[in-house]
Image (cartoon, rainbow, N blue to C red; front, side, top):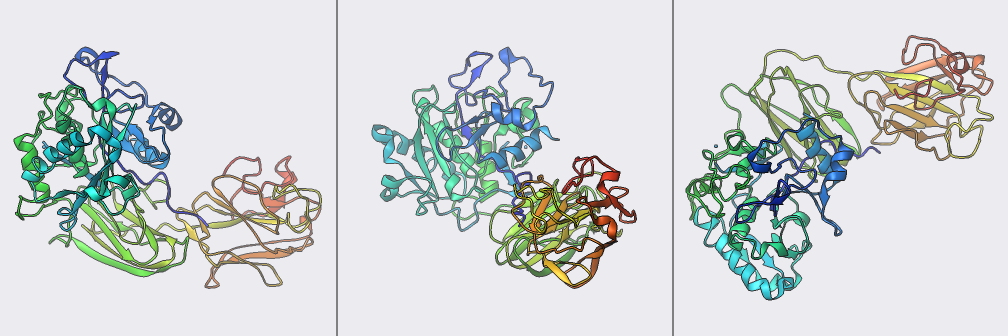
Length: 573
């Protein structure tokens, strides 16, 4: 089964404070908030000079240079102070940064990362007893950051539940988040965004935060700001330094003195105190204290506008299934929104470049079947391609709201080719399981040379006698991928873009016809061969991957007798 929870499609960011070394020496401010951690994208310029990055690191270099907290479950730290949950999300962060006004709110899959109206008034937390003698200081700092801070500006309520302080950790589901100590980290403190899962919702305070030069209440206030969804103010282009990414929406005009702005990133204040624009932005996102007007997200439409269209899709998917919905004509600069509800665990993928196989512009796979993607259509895009995948079987209902471009996009199709057949296995361990077996080492190789994925759940592989193999649910063959069905055994690894399955093929050595049919009985690919299949060598297309080309003996096109899962010369498809 192919697990569609791809590392390349999902990105999560968080927030933290860290001690900073500037140009190899202590920063001159009372305290600096972001250490120039190797691998960070927000760097501290030495003596005010601009920093020029000449080349982008590849992912392995980026990962090797990125600090990771040393304990079990520890996160990576990027941007000097931003936690990224795991290697998959670190890759997504690297891909966004290197592969391609005032308070600002973080955006997740095109929508504001904020607490809902019911959640925002019940943000419970614990303060760990592990703080020891410093616990009263931490509690006082939390009160200053919440009751006397953010709660004065917005309709939110952060509530300390001291009865959970003795078991205050990331696994205590009785609170929304926990506040815990840590030691020896390259940050003063770190936090999370509202879209994080419970196991990642922690505010960690390093021992270096005490007596660091700024009030502890200011450090905690900055972290609570992240927990409410607010980004670093210096990620805005007006700061001229320390850009992080573009996953945010401005709530007010730019504020260089904001509590969310690093001083060393061209900030204008070193006191980590709230500003009038911080208050204005908090109210804009959560409403005024006491139930004032709620937030308005102009980029997150819930109903079609006067110039927008709406379309719904519904159905059921088996576990592992992949379904590409009809492509939709779009208009650059407009908003494209798709939401999904249902049962099981069904995910959404959206791309403007083609079927969202490896390069989706949005991947919503948070678990369960309540997913959404909201995007601004990029310049030059003509169509939006939407696909859904079942991590667990279930029913789905998807709703798309968009501005129709008025054209009919071409629907990409899978094209399947039976590219190689090995019927007479005698001395070759074709399935690489360490055992030579005349039945197990037979195989049929199928390659998708089209532009769309092929869901082969319950498809059949037959010969002249009848059905020999029924493919399992969740068998999805993406463009450029190969499916190799062996007669049996335990096939070895053939490559990341090769699916290896087994079934009782029992191919005739002196001639047969092999047919791949869909679960509905439609022929997807077929090929016939004769006595030339004998002699312990496979038959392969005379022109690689050409369904019109005849089969010839493998030893006529290569020195290799067989090449399951690869081209005749051993290269990848």
